Image (cartoon, rainbow, N blue to C red; front, side, top):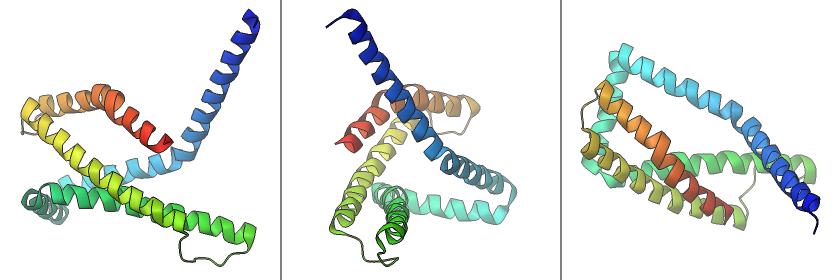
Length: 175
């Protein structure tokens, strides 16, 4: 194999990687913006509307009482079940247009298997992330000081998410 062939193959692989990355960014741009807006609204309303603060504090109390059970169930529902419903309905709507299938209809066996996978996987992730946050509280403290929050965010974003969570999720979803 010549030098240029090897180099051409690498360029093609890199080009495919960049195209796939760009496509993923485009696909997730609007949901990412929506999630950021919702998160911002939650933070602002928490600090400006006392009833909202009471609501979220009552949820925090339930989380404290239930511990890992709360984390497992909440993460399964909001990271597994809700996205699965959206993805399933999108696929069914697409299939109803292309194949003339009724919309909505009972999920296929494969879709139900995906639901079970999402529930189990994200339940585990809820346990794992709760454990990680407890570790961070032990390491950096329980108080919501600027220094503690900054340390937790930097440790999470620069190390753990990049080195562990992203790699693990990539392997799981590629499998």
